[in-house]
Amino acid sequence: MEFPKPFNSKLSYDTYMRKYSHTGCEQWEDLCRVLVNEVVEDVLSPEDKSQLIKYMSDMKFIPGGRYLYYAGRANRFYNNCYLLRAEEDTREDWATLSWKAESCLLTGGGIGVDYSIYRDSKQTIKRTGGKASGPIPKMFMVNELGRNVMQGGSRRSAIYASLNWKHGDIDWFLKCKDWHSMEVAGTDGKTVADLKEADFNYHAPLDMTNISVNYDTEWLQNYYRTGEVGEVFLTNVEQALKTGEPGFSFNFFDKENETLRNACTEVTSSDDSDVCNLGSLNLSRIRDIDELAAVTELSTVFLLCGTLKADLPYDKVKNIREKNRRLGLGLMGVHEWLIKRGYKYEVVPELHKWLSVYKGVSDATSRIASCRLGISTPVANRAIAPTGTIGMVAGTSTGIEPLYAVAYKRRYLTGGNRWKYQYGIDAIANILVKQGIDPESIETASDLAEDYERRIKFQADVQDYVDMSISSTINLPSVDNQSFTATSFADCLAKYASRLRGFTCYPDGARGGQPLSRVDYKDVVDKLGEEFDEHVEENDICLIGGKGGHCGM
Image (cartoon, rainbow, N blue to C red; front, side):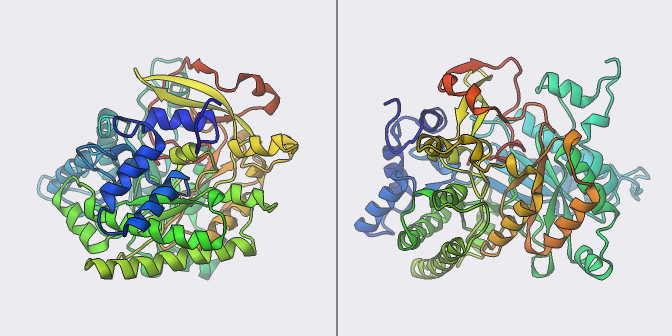
């Protein structure tokens, strides 16, 4: 056997050894024991502590990637991301925002920034008589911070930027990553997209940053009143169907001020310098609904204790954490759970029951445990991260995503800043194939690319149980092969907007350096486990594509 339990594939084991294994935590069980002892210490009884270690060792609950990386290290920067706001339209705030961003990135956490407060580039600066730069040049500045800061000394930066749909520079923002339309002088008509495709290290506008437009109650009420999505929303859809960005951030009624997002958008807040605190339940390995309740309870306590133990980059983050104490307990292995029970990709009645337990137990536990510890009660308890890396470690479907493909080619960064690739068969698909299932019959994200409403509805149905947001990327056919119009897509998305907190889509091939590419099962079988050199190098950023983004999860 090439890998030890609880790993279910060589890819899962190799991912753990490459990303998280370190001195004192060489094996998975060692890391789980070290991390539980560090985080919960004397909060849990010896029996409960032992049970939590067992749940983690069995991969029924896996903390976020920053928890895993910092287990047993001198610094304990357990938080995946930080949520920032441009707070004042002043020169001082511009400078302060850069300092906050760099301080957070240096811990290994990604950042998300809402820039909507900054005046647009058409306005005059009264004191100097000059013209305002607008928020987008500031986004470029933060993007370059990310390009040059290796997070925690171990990985490239993950950055998110958003702007309100009514902002004066929204037209610029909508097209600021349309690299296909940006010709580069002296290249015989080549575009930024062409050069990025040839060399992913080529510096393109906001290439380290994922972007979204913020939609508020006014937009929603306009839609309800007129039945029209509006020019900005339609242009947003047209651009997303072409390049995958901008995404959509929905903030309505009592959530209207929660425009701040982390880099992968699952954590929401209205407070500058808020912080993620992530971990995921692996539904595919949890035996039954009673065990789900037990795992949820101990996982919630773990994350609550994390708010007492994690190191933070500056004092305001600490103050906001004490005020909000957000817990981001999420899910992964959802599609595997469905496949094992013979269900299609939809929130069936049995899944509704499991989601109700997930919601009810996490709410009750966070309230009771925080009271027992004499600390503030978390303002929110659930956020579903993309779980790209920890889903790979667990060998299960990531977040709420359907399996991307039965067989695929995966690119990844190795030491020396070199990129390599391996062919893989999805772990769950592989098990089913060995049981005699035709690989062509397994439903995947690629198969569902045409059925986008089914994907959107699934996300909305799960969102009903989540008090923050869900990071999910809906795969679509390539731009040249889309069988639907931007108008029909916009109408469908608007219909579900009130039940969503965010939305991202990815047309196949929209970005050079796509991390996962579907390949035929028959072309992969004889090449499993082999590592190949990749000719083109790329930045290890919070990529959109394949299974969605990842930020160390």
